[in-house]
Picture 1 (cartoon, helix red, strand yellow):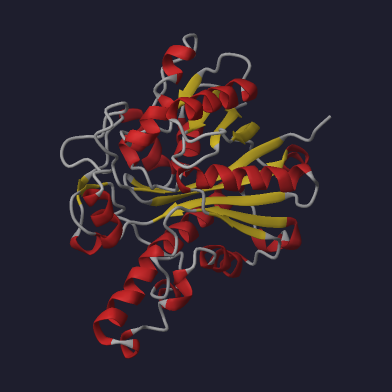
Picture 2 (picture 1 turned 90 degrees about the vertical axis):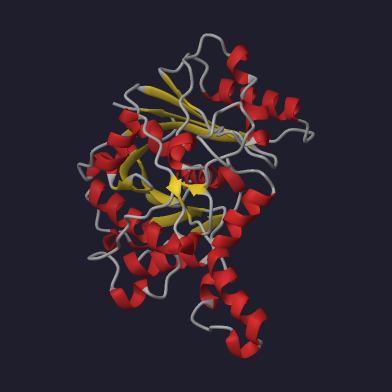
Length: 354
């Protein structure tokens, strides 16, 4: 019999606030967290973490050297370990880290290149350069929490955190590790919001509406989850938030929306043969994602109506990590997550709460 995998800790940095309590209040009220973006993040509407603070968690000298996604990830990871009642330093090589991000490194790259283009090589800041690669996030987490196990960084667009979760599942199933910190993190920055507006991928006014194809709500934040084997969690007396019944991805043979939609339906059906109590959808008003997920509703008539956290907390808020957070906050016992992507593999996961 395969070892069950369980989520024992969760940490959240969302536009609605930091921590599980703020996230639950936002999820239950279904209030979108959007406003005109601050000048330092660009222009237009977005779901920004304007009240975020790392005080008391990240030492000030180190915080100044980090980009926004790294700060978000650090705070979310800190919360996840506290929530699970785990001292990560004691786990050593038995604890790995899997990071999923869509925009990690991009904010620092823009900050590094703009002065370089304006002033030449002397304008480039060596302080920013280490943050220009997405893998710096897992490096900072490993250093901050004394993580000595393997690490991986997944850049899989909208499904990045689900890809990281899938890798964590693989490590644990193979017996390489006892636990894995799974983190999804992303940050807004001026070039990103400008690109989204120019390509008409973000809403220009009002709210994003699933199926409307009018545009998504740009967002940012981080979500961290501690994934363990059930035996390991029970041996230390840890509380189990949910059992991970599975996470999987199937890739379509073509890029046609109908084919991607069929594959997403097959992925969901193979991972949850019975009707779930709740369904967390990954579409958001992004035309490519709407084309993939919307056809599932008539195909899966017996299932509950999906709820869409991306319309509350934004599209890039952890590159899929907000879907897992919503699944843990949702009252239903068996919760399905579908995560359509714009590039290939279509993800689905099932969480079952005690």
